[in-house]
Length: 233
Image (cartoon, rainbow, N blue to C red; front, top):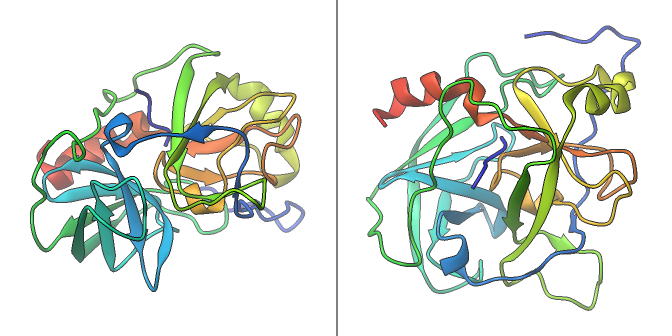
């Protein structure tokens, strides 16, 4: 599976848009289909994260939490609830451009790995993926259909998008950097949104599944050495 994953813009550049709270398209899955997924929690479910080690989770800087729930298809119950002991933010993170949007969360207690709780495989430093590479996205974000519950884990498969095309789509927002990778269908229809942020290192984008506006993910391969130096993976 592929996870996605400091320049301050001038005043003429619009602030990059965050996602607005829906998962568009997709289907319900069991946690055993994505056992690395965790629910990052404050008062309730805030967003998703990914297990990378028995006591570590990876997410975006904008999506940190005080607790995580692992090993459950539903974000509100079952599985294992752990407190976050320490959060490591990438030192180059920019709140203006969302560049270097990565955080590591160290847990107070180690997780027990089983078929519902497993670490995700990380890409190698600077590993590249061809345009059109299919990627599985997953999370508990709100669905486009208000009659559907977001209590159960959902997923969809979307392709990576050419970096130059994506950067042109967001030229008014400063484009995308080498720490970002875009994915989605140019005709729209399937996309992760706010409640899904972090789980696949979803970072930002314009609306949800808008045609011609792919979702922007943080490119984990760009900072694999930083992850290694802070985790010993």
